[in-house]
Image: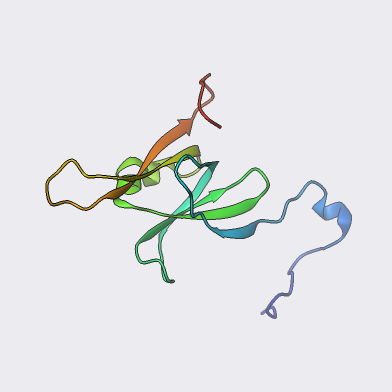
Length: 121
């Protein structure tokens, strides 16, 4: 059994050539108009301060950014998209069209599948 923080394999520079360490950058807390793009790596139930589902996106830099999955995002992103490159654009808080319903956080969701597009990324 290995000790905590012990690396159970070779750490010589030759063995690690071309590798990037994955680090967690925290939760994405966007302002209206901001966007992120990355590989959707997981959708999980949060055990921390955010109650609900959380999606993790791996950025090109290797950083992992977590996104709280609002009802809008849950309806647009499925577990079938894990492993795909996804773009999110936060549109801001939007008034519900249904009487008596609360405002909601709205997003545009894009899946990058190699086609040409004029997306804001």
